[in-house]
Structures are given as C-alpha cells and as structure tokens.
Length: 130
Image 1 (cartoon, helix red, strand yellow):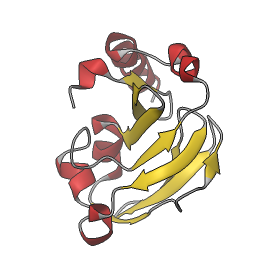
Image 2 (cartoon, one colour; image 1 turned 30 degrees about the horizontal axis):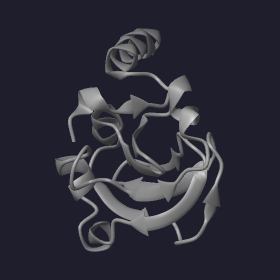
Image 3 (tube, helix red, strand yellow; image 1 turned 45 degrees about the vertical axis):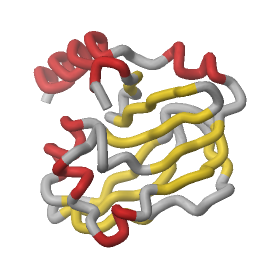
C-alpha cells in the first residue's frame, strides 16, 4: 500500500478504509523503533474493538508493545502469515505486514486521523521531544 494513501493514529498505527472495511497495521517508524519483531498475538475473529484501544500486542527483541486500533469495528480477517513470519511487519509494514481487517460502522471515524504529511510532522515533533 502507498503510505501516502493511508490515515495515521498518534500511536503509530495506520488504516486504509475501503467502504466498510478497514485494514490496519503499524507504521515504518513503529517497526523500526521496536527492532526485530519475533511474535504477534493476532486478534481473534469477531472481536469488537473500540478506536484508541488495544487491538493486539507485538513482541520484539527489545519490547512488547500494544497495537492501538485507529478505528472501531469488528475483526473479520487477520494476517495468518504473521504467525509463521512476524518479521513481515519489519520487512513490509504497509504491505505484507498488515495485521487485521475490521468492518467499521462509522466510516467518518477515519476523518479525525492524520494524513501522511501530518503524520510526518508529528514524527518530527515527537522525535525532537525525546
């Protein structure tokens, strides 16, 4: 997926909304900060998730991090390939490293998220603060 066509959450997740479906993953910045990803606890199908709450957890050689859902919805698909190869998130965070697909009730939820240029500015400011 083209990073410029996605919407971004301040917790370094991205979402691509197409109609009632929302594909979610973590950003390049997030996977880089985590280091080598060694495990992901894929969310259960049919799980209801609220925006700004934990969708799942990812473990890396450095840390365990929550993946925060940028939108509300119900999990209808998970990337089973990550069970065998969680490193796909490191290799291709906007493509083969997607995490889950939700059905969304309110497509306008994505309107409050950052676009690519806003997310880049956010990163610059966040990195300066550290």
